[in-house]
Structure formats: C-alpha cells, structure tokens
Image (cartoon, rainbow, N blue to C red; front, side, top):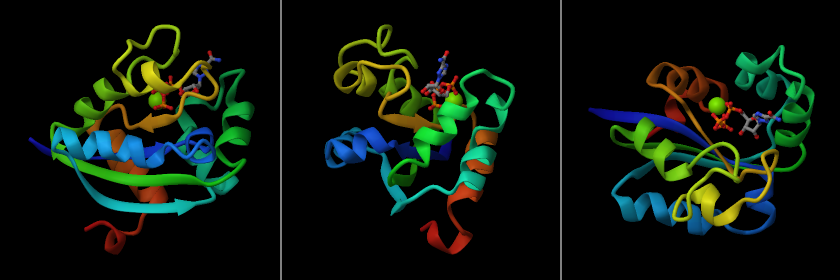
Length: 138
Ligand code: RTP
Ligand code: MG
C-alpha cells in the first residue's frame, strides 16, 4: 500500500552534515520525498511529537535535544513506507542496530541516534500534521 511517513533527521545528523547521505539512501531504495524542510522544532511541537513518552524519565532530555538545533523534517512516500523506513533506520539503541542500517552505520548513542521515523500509519498521520501543513506535502 502506498504510504506517507514522517522522518526527522535529528540535530546530530544535521550538525554532522550527513543529511544528504541519508536522504540518498531513501531515494536509492525507491522511496520519494513528498515534503522537506530545515527547521527549528519548537518546544510545543516537540512535546506533541513525543506525547507517548510524556511520563518517561527521559522525556525532558528528548524535548531538549530535538529543539536544540535545526532538524530536517521530511515526508517520505512509497509502498509500505512506514515499515520500510523503520527497517532502514535500525534498532533504537545503536548497540543493537545492525550494520547496514542508518543507525547501525552512523550512531553510537541512544540519545543521538540520528533519525526518527513514524512507527505506524496512524502515528505518521498525527506527526505529519505537527510539522507540515497540507499544502507543503506534494
Ligand atoms: P524515534 O521515535 O526517534 O523514531 O525512535 P524509536 O521509535 O526507535 O524509539 P522510541 O521508543 O519512540 O523512543 C524515542 C527516542 O527516545 C530516546 N530513548 N531513550 N533512555 C532511554 O531508555 C530511551 N529510550 C528511548 C531515543 O533517542 C529514541 O529515538
Ligand atoms: Mg518512536
């Protein structure tokens, strides 16, 4: 099924100038960029985005990190894009993410794990609305 998913290249990825390499991986796979912008995430957006983690001990750090410097926000589109992007990202903890995945190739720390991707079509719909208006998604 053709799907959209929300991807954030986190502040660590933008600072390290690896955004282009990561976008190229998606394009090479056959996924397409349906929306994209470099933006500073507001605290309000960050809290909405990470709402499922509101009660976790690391919630404050998550919000601080994602708002610390610009991210690349994207809508990635393709067949089963949600699962496809998640499998390309690799496990949350870089210690567990296989070489060949994005986190497995670029990350060493759980808190600086380079990329976010929506975990379900429902999350994707909710998260796209936090970062993009309808007319920004092509
Ligand atoms: P993401 O939301 O960033 O795509 O990552 P994910 O689905 O693989 O992981 P999730 O459970 O949603 O956690 C969101 C982010 O929180 C940080 N985290 N820290 N200290 C901890 O135990 C812990 N657990 C999660 C990670 O940076 C993760 O990407
Ligand atoms: Mg998640």
